[in-house]
Image (cartoon, rainbow, N blue to C red; front, side):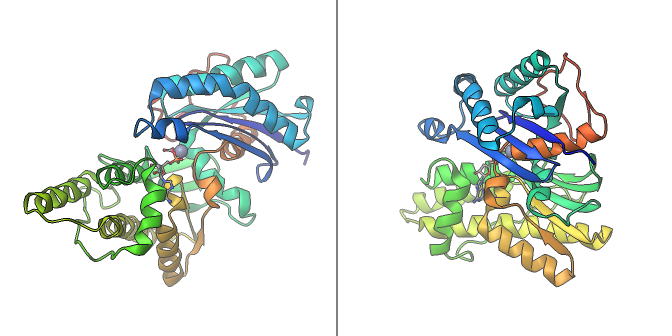
Length: 340
Ligand code: KG4
Ligand code: ZN
């Protein structure tokens, strides 16, 4: 089969990223320009600032990705871009750029679902991973348990009813004074804390055992801190962090194992920013091993937002003939499995 080179572009949140991927697996370049330093000043992502920064950086980021890949633009087979879900203004920068670039160069344009990208990040370093498998996607905006029946074919088994797992990490980190972004900070400080210091709730949803809820856990942490404060007591930051994180990890693992018991997949893969959490990685690895299920996870750099994963997802959509029209638009609430 002819070699296929996809240029991927990602701008759905606070990372401006571009990448060139060969045959849906081999990353030839992966440029990520993070805005974390800027948003840290405000304690979270400011959408208006994110869009402006994407505008300032996207051209340089795409050119750097092409240069590093040593692939001439003439040899790019298609341009893949995240068109949802995400921040509308941020998405629009990537979509408009990719559209004009593809149109000017007469290349096919492929709109990619951001969550599909996260799942596809697993193909980069695992040559042997192929559908069908089950994936847990845990990011700043999403918590999904997904059955991947084929490339590009997804069935959502469960999703969060309120906060995403990453959002809960970020909020709890803020209230215990760790700042933004909360996930990596809680991950690190937890090594110094006792995960059993506080018994925070592990929510179960009766209507669907695969759905998640993290808002009660977040409130439980806040209530605990408030009552300690009212009684004039202090708390150990690392203990709160470790106990909160243990509650999240327990729920993510138990829901995933329940899905494994029901659907009996041979493989299970985690994805998304929270999948870079070292405690979750270890717990999932052990739980899958105990069930005899092959476990996959991307390296941390492919868990958090990047464009290599978008190029990989774009490759499969391209092979399936899913080429987008010039009317491709940013869709902030795009559902997984829908194509526009
Ligand atoms: O996938 P991602 O980069 O962006 C979205 O699509 O949302 O995920 C970002 C989220 C943030 O909430 C961040 O706090 C969380 O992933 N995160 C982590 C870790 N690294 C990033 N959460 C827990 N532990 C980590 N090590
Ligand atoms: Zn993401």
